[in-house]
Image (cartoon, rainbow over all chains, first blue to last red; front, side, top):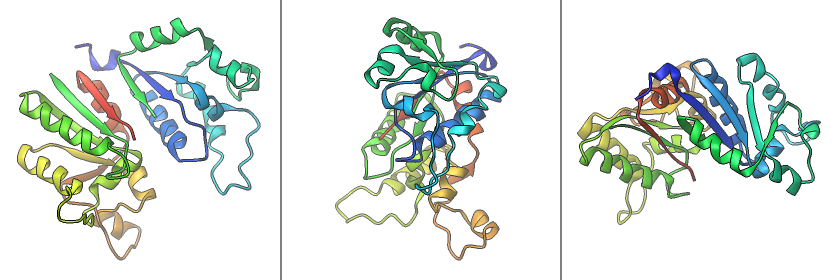
Length: 122
Length: 130
C-alpha cells in the first residue's frame, strides 16, 4: 500500500447543480480532501453545469455555491478536468465555464481513473 | 485487506445502504478489516433510530447498529450532512437547543476529514451511491 500522504484522490461529479445538494456536498469533500492530499476534479455529463459561468440562484432559494469553485486553485486543486465530447453535446466551450477546466479525450479520461488511487463519485 | 465503505444513499429510497450493509458484512465474514463506514449525503438517514418499517421488512438502521455491536464497526455520519437533514445526537441537539434527537448511539457524528482519512488509510474505499 502507498503511504497515505502519497495517495491521489479523484472527485467525479456528474450531476447538475441546485436540483439537489449533491454538488455542494461534493465541493465540501473536495476542499476537505485538498487539506490532506493531492486532489483532482472531473466533471462528466451534466456535472459540467456545476461550473457554468453566470449562475444566479436568487429566485431558487438555494445557495450559489458555484462561486466557491473559484477557490479550488487557492486550495491547491489545480487538476480540474472534463470530457471534451460532453462539452460539445451541451453546446458548451471551456470559455463558458467559471473556472479553468481542461478538456480531455475519452482515452485521457480513462487514464484519469487509472492514475488516481481513490475515486469518489458524487 | 483493509476496506472502508461510504454510503451516500438514503435507506429504502435507494438500494445503496442495503447493498453497503451486505458488502460490509461480507468484508467482515471474509476476515478482511473494515476500517470505517462513513455516511454522507442522504446516507446519514441510516442513523435514524426512529426508522420503523413494517414487521416483515428489514430495519436498516437496526441492521447497521447490530453490525456495529457485533463487530465493533465504526459508523460515522458527516456532521454537516446530518445537521442539514435533521439527524442529531444528544450533544448536537443540546448545542442547537432542539427538543429532540434521533441518532442511534452506535453512530458517531464527525467531520468530512473522516471520509478523507478512510480513503488514505484503507486499501479500498468503496462508495455506494443511490
